[in-house]
Image 1 (tube, rainbow, N blue to C red):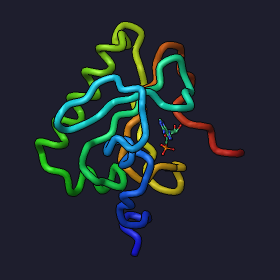
Image 2 (image 1 turned 90 degrees about the vertical axis):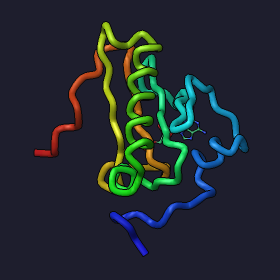
Image 3 (image 1 turned 180 degrees about the horizontal axis):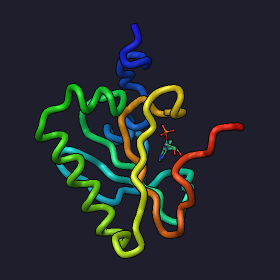
Image 4 (image 1 turned 90 degrees about the horizontal axis):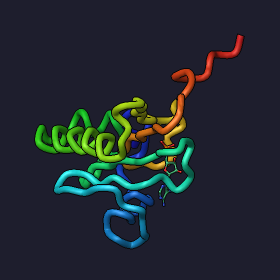
Length: 128
Ligand code: AMP
């Protein structure tokens, strides 16, 4: 069964394995609600991922079903991480891929934080 176009949560996904400590990550910050760590294949001088500790497939799943405390805690950590990494002066981009059209690869909700250089346009222009 597909939920928001994605299969149900798979506890074997790579971010679930990171949360269980089965595979390592370069941790930036962690609290009761979320974990931030460096992306393994950075697309900018700073490229950090923030994931909730709960089992949510996607942004759609997280926003529809997480508790208010989880949602608030998650976004608070996103802001703290950007501040801690010194991104506020120059600015940064937060991005979350949801589902097929966005090319979501890992089926555990996450946001990317990019910074450290000019980041160009938001998305590729559609083919003419
Ligand atoms: P998305 O396409 O939004 O699902 O992005 C998934 C991101 O996870 C990609 O930027 C990958 O480079 C990153 N990624 C995959 N495996 C790992 C890992 N073990 N540690 C850190 N980042 C990872």
